[in-house]
Length: 328
Image 1 (cartoon, rainbow, N blue to C red):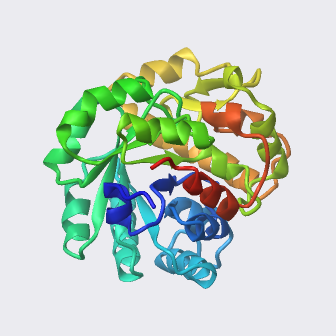
Image 2 (tube, rainbow, N blue to C red):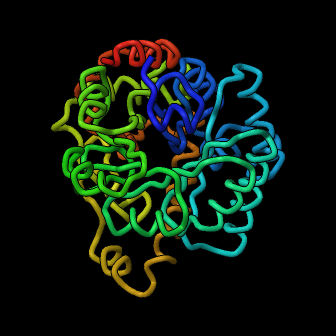
């Protein structure tokens, strides 16, 4: 059984993270992936707003989601804290969610976007660890200054918010920093997993592969689109959050963004613009996740790992097969 700094930090069998995905990270998927021996990450907005809890977007909603997961597995799970600048109400909500996650026994945290110093302080006080999403050395060094314990290296093959460097370039650029590095992007099969580990990464984070699973609550046509897509079908758009997101291409999605949006995103109004775009996107994706939107090809986020994804299976089965393939 391979041991890396990730498996030690997360107390897991395999150095594989099922990444937080909006709106795909439903409790059943998180439980199934973690049960397989890796660790899956709770995405709090997805958990509390998309998947139909009685009191959505509240403390009770997150507790209900974690309770549902715990009914299905007692294996370690993680929590995703999106800490980008926003309204005071949003920051307070995320702060409350972090406290709830800690109170519910979660000790592995993944921070995205903002400055994670306050998250590190709070999580470390409870004996937990914090890994931080980065796309370049600048953000990696900022994360280290804030006290993070590991870096999730988002490369140019990732789904969702993608980076600009390759898997190899990111490792070469960041390996001297001394922290565990997790390869995020382009990992869909045993081949890519072992390539990343052999390069020197302490683990991988996978998203797209776990959308095409029995437990993921996204519509079947989304899963079929992933199976049928090839690497060349992956494009990007700024329509969803205001920054480039990798998606399965369609005629609609190729209209990346109009000149007004691009201008606002490069102005002093960029944060307000992103909040507006994200808000509109949320309601569209919520309808999509609940099956109320029949055609959502412009919303199908996926990375270039689609090239090696050929079936819909249980997330537990996938995780165990990937883990068992790791070359010692």
